[in-house]
Amino acid sequence: MSTTDKIKETVTSNDVVLYMKGTKTMPQCGFSSRVAGVLNFMGVDYADVNVLADEEIRQGIKEYSDWPTIPQLYVKGEFVGGCDIITEMTLSGELDELFEKEGVAFDKEKAEQIRAANQ
Image 1 (cartoon, one colour):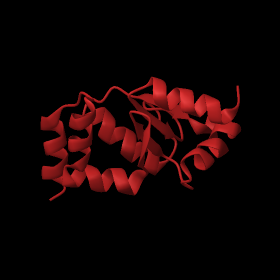
Image 2 (spheres, rainbow, N blue to C red):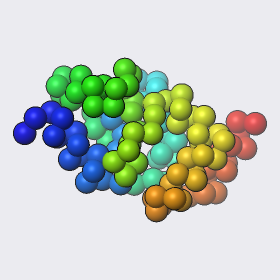
Image 3 (cartoon, one colour):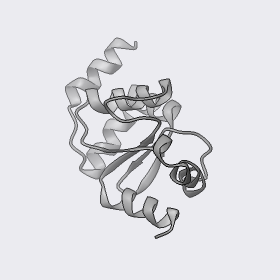
Image 4 (cartoon, rainbow, N blue to C red):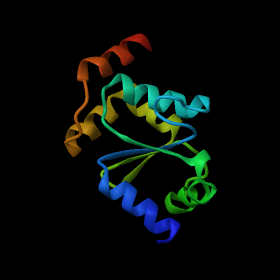
């Protein structure tokens, strides 16, 4: 199976996937930590893929999405964005809307706490 096929299978067989440096319980960079922290705090069930564990995946995900940086968040097979975009979407409420539209369970009260803490 090619790297592209592995990535495609991962993003289509999980509702939410975060390609990151490290894992959801032990992020290895600040940007990955921020996105994982948001998802963890909001109680989102997601698959984490540690790009540091596989150089082919680390390069392949950048080509797959045509996005140069890690982390990368996918919801229902679609690329959503990296750290800055996810942060912006969280603070604007757009991430809540996306999760609701796609049927992804999350704790709306926790999402509101994030926004309240960042006003």
